Length: 332
Ligand SMILES: *[C@@H]1O[C@H](CO)[C@@H](O)[C@H](O)[C@H]1NC(C)=O
Ligand SMILES: *[C@@H]1O[C@H](CO)[C@@H](O)[C@H](O)[C@H]1NC(C)=O
Ligand SMILES: *[C@@H]1O[C@H](CO)[C@@H](O)[C@H](O)[C@H]1NC(C)=O
Ligand SMILES: *[C@@H]1O[C@H](CO)[C@@H](O)[C@H](O)[C@H]1NC(C)=O
Ligand SMILES: *[C@@H]1O[C@H](CO)[C@@H](O)[C@H](O)[C@H]1NC(C)=O
Ligand SMILES: *[C@@H]1O[C@H](CO)[C@@H](O)[C@H](O)[C@H]1NC(C)=O
Image (cartoon, rainbow, N blue to C red; front, side, top):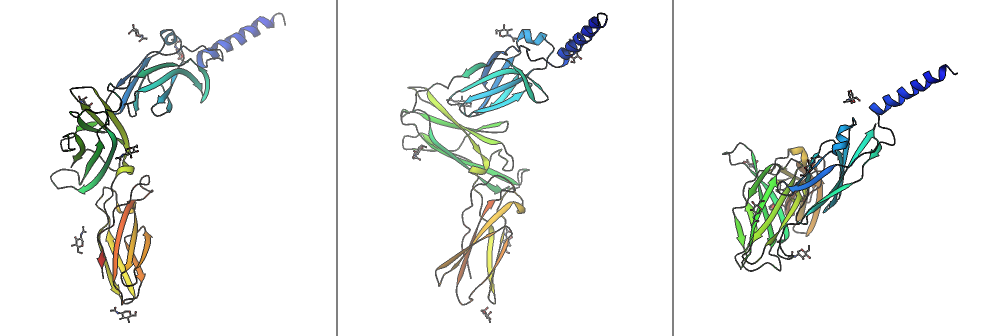
């Protein structure tokens, strides 16, 4: 033993040392990142940046960062980078914390303390910002002059804030992906303040999952006007077109109804339909759900029938959204 013990200790020591090289031990002290900053990097987009603690950088450990967004919407994620983009409305400012962590096979081994930073809300007294901002998109067939076969229009409306001076003017911008555009076609209220905007053509792709960022800021000679920004999920604001060419014919005791898919970038298999058949004599209405473009009903062919259909993009292609309006009635 007396001869073996030093050799054994040496072996143990080597094992511990090797362990420290590759896996941090339980007592590894992680130092928090430094110089956390949050800056606005576009419409409803903030850039978080930080640096590894200079003393940590000298240790040979792979550090990840755990990011927490506290407000306006809570979010939490991990990254190896020291730069992170956060997409969120910024009109109430943004507050975030970051800590350094080390994971081993997914298990949290060590964590530094948190460091925090805040992005101040933009200037302007409460009540000056636009309120009740709503937006809708609609798809039209391309006019052939542009490469895209579909063009998406955007309509947004809002009201002037209660505390906005009479000379306030509002301006609307939208961002989809990397592109930001300013409104050129406004509607105005009785005080000549912009309260709605229309983009006949946008860079919005209805099949993408990006959210649409919309900002309404403003100016007045009397005070700063607080901006308002919102993120919209496309499926929630897309005003789907009604089915096209809804027709019906009577063959004996059958009423056969056919229609075509709405003008949309989504292909045929992406639509759910509802068909409404009104028996005008009996004042009776029947509504049927369909996933194909036709429906046949057994009828009393001495009556007069009017058919209408409406469409929605089915949940096989995107999250549940709005129904189109009903197609004009077709009567037989
Ligand atoms: C850091 O560790 C890696 C693997 O754990 C090793 O290959 C590398 O040589 C080490 N670097 C330093 C400077 O110790
Ligand atoms: C942190 O910011 C200070 C002041 O701007 C700067 O001197 C320092 O080098 C920065 N530290 C790191 C690690 O980037
Ligand atoms: C504006 O929004 C507020 C709160 O969301 C709501 O209570 C109010 O009815 C809306 N006003 C109009 C005119 O839509
Ligand atoms: C409104 O926001 C846009 C886009 O960020 C900016 O270019 C413009 O200067 C702002 N206008 C006012 C009046 O704040
Ligand atoms: C609608 O039906 C008519 C007649 O069948 C046809 O000429 C027209 O091309 C159809 N429209 C569409 C959009 O398919
Ligand atoms: C109405 O239906 C009856 C029974 O199916 C058939 O005999 C008759 O020809 C039909 N009338 C018309 C106008 O289609």
